[in-house]
Image (cartoon, rainbow, N blue to C red; front, top):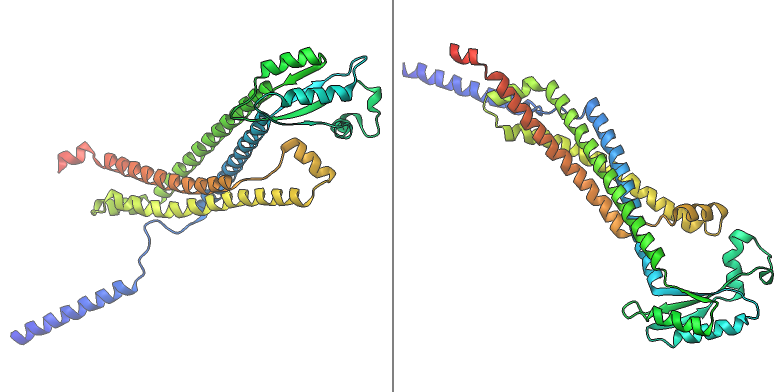
Length: 335
């Protein structure tokens, strides 16, 4: 009897070892299947949305930086314009205006725009070879001021009116205010577009996750009702969609960053060409600073995190719907 019991015990041990070996050799299938057609489609959509978001972010950053640079240039200089008049000695008037500007504290330097420089300013509108003496072309004096302690513009205007009545001072305040307003409106529009793109990306992730959940609902139900926690199931979907979001957003953001790099390199290598001059005049320089590229990297991380969080919330909500559907009152009464 004892020998028989020992044989049965040995057989059970061998069977247990075989089962363990089979479980070890059998590959563990993931709860969420590998990226399939729907996963690839979602990755493409996220890549497109990330590209558009990064493109918008880079453009807004460039506009903001250019506006700040222009504002700094405008705030550092004032312009004194002298209109031609009968009996006015233009060269003497320019020298007198320059000396008046330099006599006020807060002015750092003053430079007279000579005839050649004035002609170059008018060439885009009047063409080359025109005679300045035949046209009532005003002359300019550019005055650099101290931004921290600017001069008294009212006193300068009064002294200019007494000494040279044909001279007028422009402190560029109206232009600076318009520039600031334009930059703010552009930034607000860009932020609005980014918000819409984020909302579209989030909705896309929600519908894609629900599609995957519908295809694997039976697996989720079995796992959930045999004791798998909601957090465990949600983490499996979250990892899968985090990888999809990271790949898609990295591709789209990298493509946008590469576009800015190529456009900047093209403008730098094709200086003084007609096409480059026209593009620069219409859109400015496609030069994105380090802050813009860091912003694109942050955008990639944000979209990936948003994809993962949205996926987890959607899975949690779906499991709650399963629980509500299973909580049938008639089944509770029979039990």
